[in-house]
Image 1 (tube, rainbow, N blue to C red):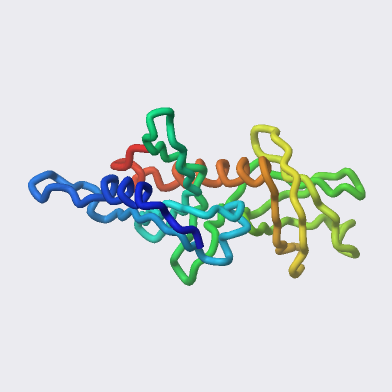
Image 2: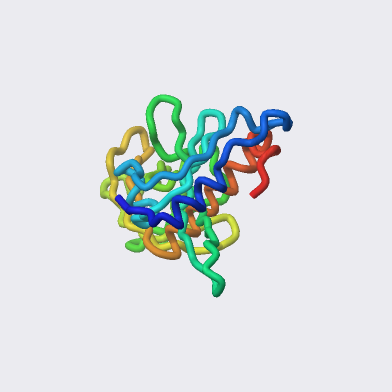
Length: 199
């Protein structure tokens, strides 16, 4: 947990002050809040951020890593990182992109590509080629549709009918790029939820 200074608290009180009732509030179904505590399952995914901005949109929570910097005049300037999208239907879990296209992982042992079937910040399902069914592949690179390679730790969980579920973990720039990709995909898929939000 992080403690906010009086100046930081005053800044956030001003930023999140209720709007005048006479104004048209088209964002009534959305909410924003600042959190100094985040769910433990998100701490690693968000790079152990000490401060976050939580936006709730329909069934989804968007946890933005938030940092405050002071300019030369002592004014606070908030900087939002890329959010982790949490799907609240059926429990809290990272939003999963299903029906994945043009995303692969590399099996370093055979230098073969393996097709990704679904992807989130914390896990994936892959189609295991028949020649790899006898062993758990050691996969350490995720390849996005734009050709970017992301390093990750891959931990198989179970295999059934040629489909393997695995936990994944990425660090640093790879983690940020994966989160940015998933957030962009979420915005594209659910553009109607974002149309009244300026970011």
